[in-house]
Length: 193
Image (spheres, rainbow, N blue to C red):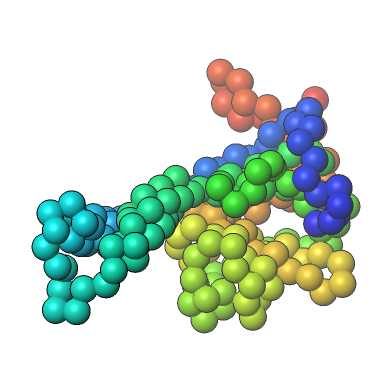
């Protein structure tokens, strides 16, 4: 990552690979839905109907806070959160919505090495999302596969992918300056004449 210049929005470069990943695991959706329903039920029961919720009910102000924070904002953020990854001629572009406002770039000149990896989500990164762990910085949404980028100063960034091999091959093409052109007859190597 080139720090100050990392949030470049110019997108004139050809896209060699693009992947958009959402948090769509069934257990994840069920957990968010369950918490949201419980908070809404508590709010309606106590604040709207005037009946105490539970054996030791909290103040109405607390339920307002929980409703706004965990009954509306938190589920909206998590359900709408997604990771956009693009490999272009000039580098790898990332955006983790809603946490990044713009796409940011890891320049191709910054990448020393790249390799497909299998990781353990909890052990190596402490979970999904933008994480800092034993393997470096991780950007992952689901699964346990991705591409590890080795950068200067012993920095590593792991980007999770559901299409790891294709992602790694696109990085290889970007690093060597090769492109793929897709036409109606199939896939043709951009360097072939």
